[in-house]
Figure 1 (cartoon, helix red, strand yellow):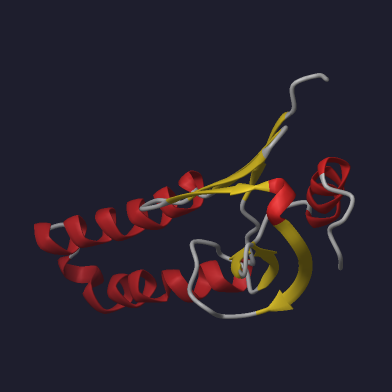
Figure 2 (cartoon, helix red, strand yellow):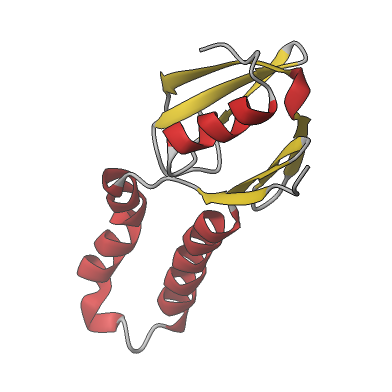
Length: 136
């Protein structure tokens, strides 16, 4: 059996990015005259935008021959693919390290996790190649 190792980025909804950038845009508008002289405003904006960027870059989903690996900025989850029983599409604003409300709900071992890979159909098909018993 050939080794499977596929990575998927997290999906992004542009309106969520705009919503998350609203504090920075508001800060820029209200403090524009002071922006060059106030180091604290610059530091805050730098760290806020950097943190959003890190969340996006660090949230990835990897499918191997036996496991679904979920990498997030502060956590790592590894799910044995044979334990996955069901995958359903959900719309949720429930907190997760993704910038999308369109998510996949992965049911496994009596638990579930919400994720949002970029190419959902391809992602689901790859998991079903390994575990054809996964229901929709």
